[in-house]
Amino acid sequence: MLRKRLGVGFIGSGFNSRFHMLGWKGVRDGDVRGVWSPNAKNAASAAQYANSLDVGPAKAYRSIGDMVADPEIDAIWLTGPNQARVENVEEVVHAIESGRGTLLGIACEKPLARNVAEAKEVLRLVKRTGIMHGYLEDQVFAPQVDAGRSLIWARGAATTGRPYLARAAEEHSGPHTPWFWKGELQGGGVLNDMMCHSALVVRHLLTKPGESLATVKPKRITAHIASLKWSRPAYAKQLSKTMGVDYSKSPSEDFASMTIEFETSDGYTVLGEASTSWSFVGAGLRLSSELLGPEYSMSWNTLDAGLKLFFSREVRGRAGEDLVEKQNAETGLMPVVANEAVAYGYEAEDRHFVRCFLGKEVPILTLDDGLEVVQVLMTAYKSAEEGKTLEFPPRGIDKFVPAVASGTWKPPRQGR
Image (tube, rainbow, N blue to C red; front, side, top):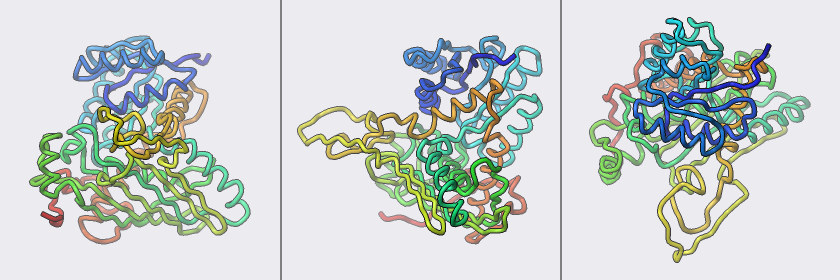
């Protein structure tokens, strides 16, 4: 007999977990039941936030083991920082294998880990338990991406041939919290933080709906990374003051681009172009994608939201993000993304994986897909470091750690 509702516990209490909770208002057969964080105050605050959205009832737990052991918790959403990923999964698995609790599933936020070795360890641990798993990649579930892809394939590709070029980008002015800026903690810079989105989106767009990602295989990767803004002296000083990181000594890349050459199961070569930036100056977070084929194209840009507000110089107020994520201004003509949790795909992905763990759907993304994304990212770093196109996967990628993550990367000098 299928369960009617899924009780979910969150590992992590920050910005990402709260976006999921906001999207949970559109999840009809699951509840946010718990939150654990190494900071008890933050865990309690996040649980209170879930309850204020009426997506609970949620409570804070003193340990991951206690949360897994609670019969009210049926599944775990991993949304904590990258550097804690393996440790957090180890605690979940230990609680299951010691008999303290049982779970129906575990879903992990992007990226799966900081490098291939860690990603393989996460996958090994989860598979050892035998529970269902899912990879949380919100942009694949964004309504415009989903609708555009479906229509392109049903109308354009069905009559004139498969698409041959996909583009995706994610750009904003920089992360919210210090650990994202630190290569040794996060696993790199903007490439590891955000290219995981774009690299998967281009592959997803080039894959026929209903078919496996394995029908569009990465074959060659060319990538470039740069520190365009935040290692410049004035901005490095600003970053040191606001985030406590010194980009004059240990910078991470704030721009990355990548071209992926794919081989399809029906014998075509198709291309994916992806770029990411922490040095974007605009209204706020901008997500975009394109898909092109012989007689058709699609495009998506989150800042083309349809709703715009204008505030003159006389309007005064505190800085915030009430119009769009990573909002950069409070006056002038600005776009508004009215429901970001829906627009970016959080609601749809959470609804999907809740239904998967209840036995109602089959996961379209698993931790195996998350591992392959990490392999693509590490190949991109290796390509950028070596300055050449690499076959995928390159030899030695399992042990590769980017120079950015090890603190040895030195970008070309950018201004005074």
